[in-house]
Image (cartoon, one colour):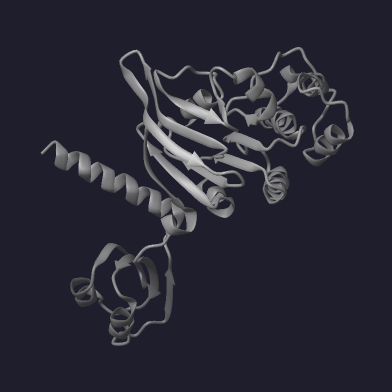
Length: 301
């Protein structure tokens, strides 16, 4: 049984489409990334999954339950971190955490103490006196305190300092190794590349691609950085060179093609230093966006 299954999930706000027929499957035990630019429909998709926003059409099945008709049970089972954390301002941190524990029928306080220590939560401070990062730490505790089988995380590391981010990511890896499914939506593409085995790319409410994260970032394109005082114009003409930038004796560009003849051609130049790297996941996502824009332009031509 999939942990998450979306079928043609669609949301219009008036006449404006926010999500268009989004379909994807997240298997149990996946560490799944969900990425896209601001306004692409990421948070709206997640809120429909959690039944905080009602879809115009389509369905979301979470842990085998319909997200609408069984949302009460679903919200008790899933660990959810929203992108924007909002609590009653006069409550103290521990009051929020204990309320979340009581809603799930949890009696064991040791897990709460463990998580509060790990994330350095100031449990006696009122919400009104807390920064965004400190409020987000409370959300992490309430999402993790019942050791859920599924975590749905919308920008969970925003506002956190580097130490807490590292502790949180390490804990996610541990929970995933124990069998938890993690749906990880994050603007930090580097974190998605670091953690997620599979990733979905969404743009303008449409899911463009779902694939293994490593496959998304691998291609026949390489990023090349070299140091030379030679004129490389002949090389640029001979090979598929894109985006060349020359700054003094430092030259960077993208090369698409077979590496052997390219390296042999470089041997004809005096190269002081050479670095060749695979594209990052961010590069791959930009490539998907560019292809989509080209397709849209061709369709309207």
